[in-house]
Image (cartoon, rainbow, N blue to C red; front, side, top):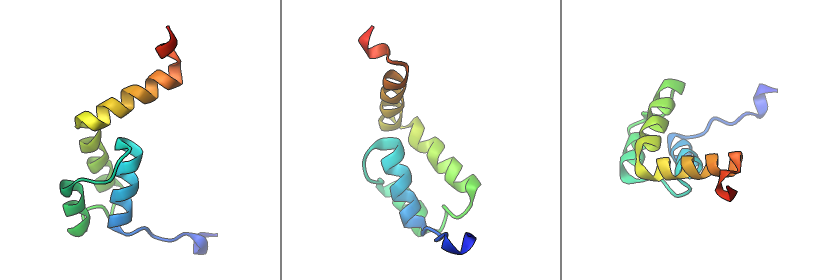
Length: 75
């Protein structure tokens, strides 16, 4: 049940979000957000994710993911 769920710290959220969206560790800006406790709500995490995706690392990773998913690299 819900007792098994462990609340991630802001730092853990920052790290997981960064590896998911960038394929690398969080940068100083994201770590600063985590340190300030600004990754505690779904809305805050969504805002952080949006910023990561607007960064060139996020855009490149998203394009690669779509390429693999749609298989258009082989065309």
